[in-house]
Length: 464
Image (cartoon, rainbow, N blue to C red; front, side, top):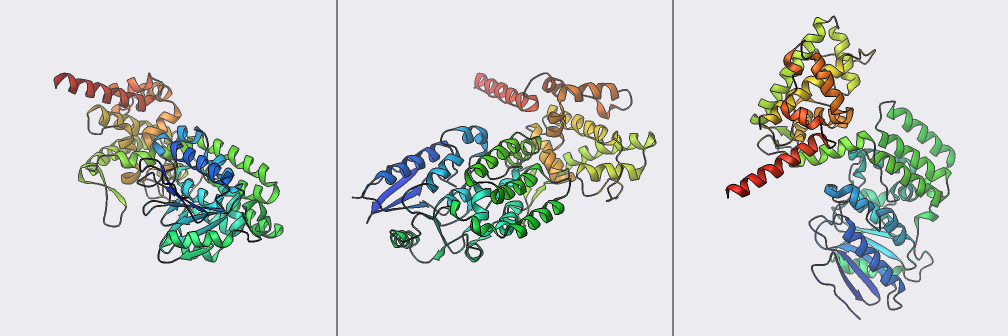
């Protein structure tokens, strides 16, 4: 019997010769939002109970397997049932062999979905990556537990901490992929699924891969060396990833999965992740007239963007000049910038050392005030545009999310009080109207921008 779902559905399903072919159909990148996760859950449940189905293949319509969840609704999407963690656990515990076919990129949640299958195939040119760390997160769908059980702790740590894509051929060499398929990938996956039906391995679950993590003594050395290499300034997500891989060695599988989920939730609510997710979204929203991709694919401020960056630099320079007038040395200012996360200080110093606590607040305050003036004057559409320009034009530390986000995290009402206190010393700290408004509402600049957009849309409608 063969059945086909409607094209508008997030899944395309077909049963042929006792193999269920389940295709992700949520273009353009098969982001694992709530609707797709629910459809996958229902499909796995249905075919697990169907006596006419012996195996299941999860693949994709189009050239992308899946590159994760929709960041626009990331928090909500993670909470909608079934969560990614619960879905992956359901796939792993399916009583029938589940084969994941990667015809293209499998990143973040997509990579974790692939890990939850019992077997993984890939076409040449595809890649798998755990990119969560770029957003200050760790894989929260079992990735930190299944990956070391498949490829060992050392290789797992390298993949999880770098976030870099691993080509299918490399993935096969380390045991992450079971085979590279040629020609008609769907037919090859169908044949492979039939081949594992009834085999002793059957549904090969990651839970049974404890021995592949590595010898306990060697894993402990690897964990210790990784922690030392990360150092005290490491992202919370990075240290949490190491903790989770260690848990894969020390804890029972179910307890380790719970440990990972708790670590994910801690990272998700941490200011670092909030800032990194903010800039990840912002850099994709900022006008191309201000920030664009160069020939190498890197984001750079345009000529118009550089003009705004120059204004930010000017405000920063005035704050630094005031600090110097107060007797703070150039070396001390450079050290404060390096401690902040800049590659070097404004006077060229690159060494860390004792930090004068007056430097960062004064410079951040000047950037906040100037950024708000740009927003007030309509030079940028949202506060996040200032953040993106500061990161790509000034080398501002990405983990802070930019000066506007950093100020909002520090508390806009407190920042506003400080600016007003500093104003008699230099008008570089003069607060603008929109900054005052942002400090008066819970959502800060996010709420003010939303209000302005709603007001503008209403005004345009009235005029129309």
